[in-house]
Image: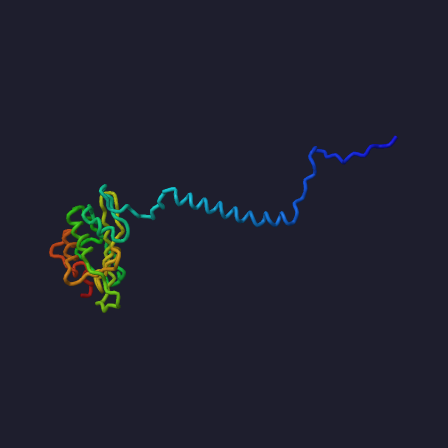
Length: 208
């Protein structure tokens, strides 16, 4: 009896999978990167159109508005000086070996809003320091750190040198105390010093 020939069977019942030709594989390799780029571009457009603003940086606050919010950036204090409620004055001495003496403590707290605001306005009225190199008197390392607050908001600190060029940092552009300004008097009155001046904040060296 003759045997009837039958095609080979497959255990899973499926037909054998055909291998793609070399040309087909090359065409698919070119199409995949293009599809990936198109998907990435669509995702970028969706993100830009979502309307969600970038998160603010550390310490940033909203710009002034009708709601009374405080200004942001370097000149924030000058834009919101009228809202200042308190001031902390901290003195530092980079040359303690001079044994400089002062008539008031190294830290003073000003809770009178009017006096604190006067100091803020005085600092903001100072002229910008010249960009060229300045010929300054001797620097004795006495610096004051002024921290203003408006309610629960704390502004970036302002530093003020009591000698040398008497430079002010922390108000955007570097500023300079000049002979015509009354910043030292305003600061002295704020912390309750009678007849204050620059010499009051520069202190007296023990050998003098």
